[in-house]
Length: 149
Image (cartoon, rainbow, N blue to C red; front, side):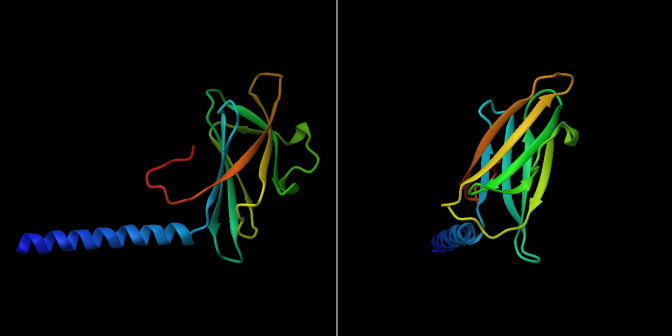
């Protein structure tokens, strides 16, 4: 009889934890994730703070072998430039070995928004630039033990 009660308690607690996780996933802002075609860049755009309105942070993760020089990035929401270089030039290069972050505070995005990031980079020591547009897709944040980069 005691074992039966213990099993019932464990089942009830497990169901409650699952429900709490589902509610948390629904209430928490989703993240936006994108990858370049060659897989060298992963972009994660997520809400990081509620102070002074919403503050969202974009992080560009370099997955390639060699270090690169990021010439510019342009972050667009529904076709409107929200962060990055308005007039890209070669003077704004940043060396990257791992990741690069930018912050843009804005409203919560919904599934109808079209979010893109234009990148131009080159491996250090090379002369050829690579330019690519990445479309970010909406993902729900609550996937335990899953890394986006």
